[in-house]
Image (cartoon, rainbow, N blue to C red; front, side, top):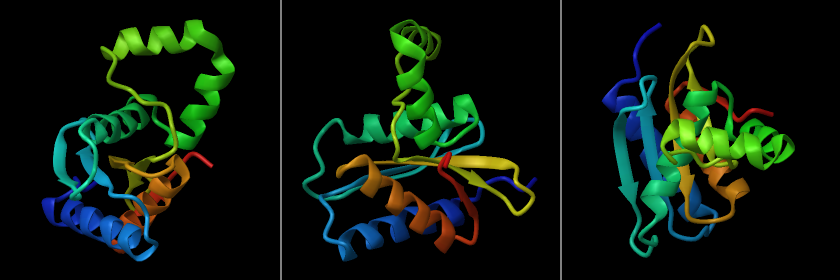
Amino acid sequence: MNPLTLAQASTIVDKALEHGRGAKFKPLTVVVLDAGGHRVALKREDGSSILRPQIAEGKAWGTLGMGFGGREFARRAAGGGAVFLQALMAASGGRIVPAPGGVLIRDANGAIIGAVGISGDTSDKDEMCCVAGIEAAGLNADTGE
C-alpha cells in the first residue's frame, strides 16, 4: 500500500471544486484525510459557510472510522436507531457525520489510503464531487454503494 501523497490530495481537492463549479453547485469545502485520519488538504470556497470544514471533515473521518463509504454509513446509522448513533458519537468524540459526501479513497489493490469529505450543497452533490476528485487523481472511490 502506498500512502496518499500531498500531490494526490491537492488534485482531489482542485478537481472536486472544479466539478462543483462546472455543475453550478453551491460553494463547497473539501477535506482530504490520510488513512490515519490526519488532514492532508483542505480548501473552502468563497461563500462556503463557517461550519463546512467541520462537516466535511466529519464525513471523511466517519468513513475512515467505520471502513465504508458515507452512503453506507448513513444507511446503517438510520437503521441502527438512536442508541447506535449516540454510541458512535460518544466513541468518536462527536467527530463523525454519517452522510453521503464522505468517500473512501482506495488504491489499485483496494487498500484504504484516505478519505474525502465535502460539504456545501446536498449530500448527493457533495458525493459526486468527491468521486470526481478521487478519479481525477487516478485513485478509486468507495461511496458505500
